[in-house]
Image (cartoon, rainbow over all chains, first blue to last red; front, side, top):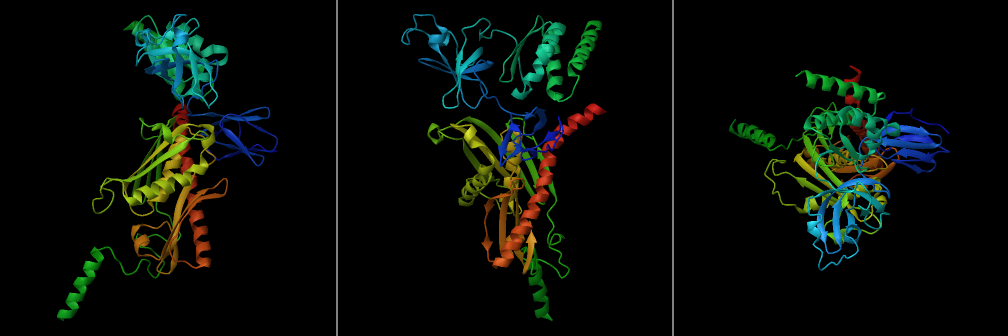
Length: 233
Length: 260
């Protein structure tokens, strides 16, 4: 039962990763007892599970995920939201409006209009139906201000870091609030545009160098340097 | 005297019309200086279009091809969506300036046929059943053509799909082989294709050892046909190595910059 690549080695679709008693994880597939790569990315072994951290992928919704989406349409029963997944998501009006919701009388565009950005949570999704969203939790709803940053969804775990170490460091060092959508959109809201720009710089660095180790410290250093340079001006 | 002069003039005209009498000289060297089993130089680049989800660019001899990929996303119009898998919308299009005489930009009968042929060649590589009710769009733009564009189109399209992060069983690579002046040759260019005896384009998934496209235009004996396929597959394997290199090079560039 050999393994053909080392941990963190780069593979392309079709590369043979392992043979025999292994379980295929993300971005891999098994055929005739052999595990192959299905995306470009870095190999990782987790016991018997072989998976790939893809360098580029698209978002597949999962119940419980926090996402940031854009309203693309209002319908009599609710809204259609683009969450950068293969399907548009739905947000029911009955989820947003309290009890007395009547499609004839309630003015839905006055709540969310086309083009509005919202923070929501995925309630249900199983590929046969469009994902369903909810905003009935604290912190969810329409985005009023801030800066939106986009990374490829597979890099979100890197942005969060181990037990949130990366994201809490950025929050602490820049003084910005970060809301991370699992679909790759990150909302940054800080006290000044200078702070926000600092957070954007940090995120850009993470995006470009997501595959390197010790990144949290590097980013921390970079932010401190930048801040000092700003203050001395 | 006069008669012979006329003859030379005619010869010159023939040359200007790009109809050489011999495609292969005595030493086995082809019109563009290649050996019988030699490919044209291939240059591949990935991620050249920031607006598309995935993209790739290829130069193979005088061929220049640009491919952009979108998706998987909501299928439009709605009725084309399949309930059990994703659909691929593939467009092969030759730019008006891609050939000697201006080609109408409207899709020709040939364009439509090649779109279908290329779609069916890349379909087996993609996990369509993972993304039901969606569409994956592949736009293949031939900027300059010099024979073998369907093969080069498949090679480029599969790279663009991999760049878009669409899960694939393997990269699809394609190469043609054929016969000209009674000799078997690989990677035919336009004149060899038009004047030669046969052209056999083959698309291939090397890791799975599966052929996804096989066509033949012209006549070959059974023995020649088998040899031709072997030559095309050898060509495919050479291009496959370049494909993987192109795909990985983007990432390696980042790594090297950091080590410096």
